[in-house]
Length: 145
Image (spheres, rainbow, N blue to C red):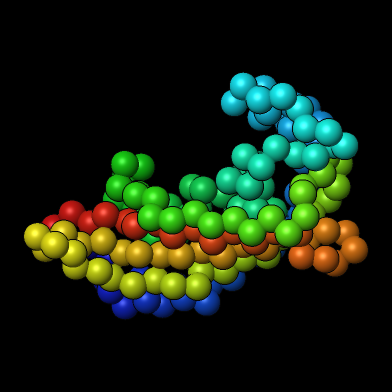
């Protein structure tokens, strides 16, 4: 099992940052795949907030697994997902992303089950420099003994 010190040292880890442009085809396919109708005025469906902030920070979900030393794909449990949408995302707008790990701690729960609780914070900024959205994701990395 990865050490408690290794997990605690993740706090403050910053992702490289980057940019992400949501093209019309991506929004169309995402919207269609969830059985929704396209939104007006090139507004991107809010479901995009699950992946766009991560990709805009020049990282991947796979990298989040690696950073937390996930034992397997099945060892991650979603604790919480918060999204503050200050402005709707729009198609064909290039958003800048930045993000970091804000919390990381080892927890021993009921029955002695051990997990590491890691919280990621991502922000999207529009081309004018205005904060457009913030997402905070908290995952529990379940540990086997």
